[in-house]
Image 1 (tube, rainbow, N blue to C red):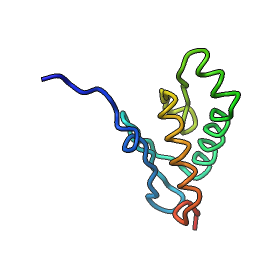
Image 2: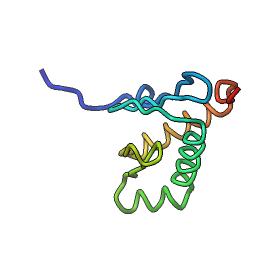
Image 3: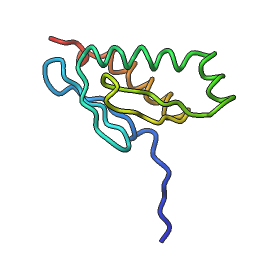
Length: 102
């Protein structure tokens, strides 16, 4: 029986609020614990990687991005659909009350 190695993009990246200012990023390969400042840094990096010029550079060169997360404790390999899905997930996360550190 052949193994389907395609990853369902809709299920591959999820951010959950654990406790006060503690979050978890679920990726296809690992689960990464994040603090609120690390979440802000992840959002900044993703926003930087998803500008028109950055996406153009990625597509015209290597067609993927490597991203250090959680104070460089983890390295994530992102293809373009995964990068865009993560941007969407982070954007939605910061527009809900769960992202507030209170």
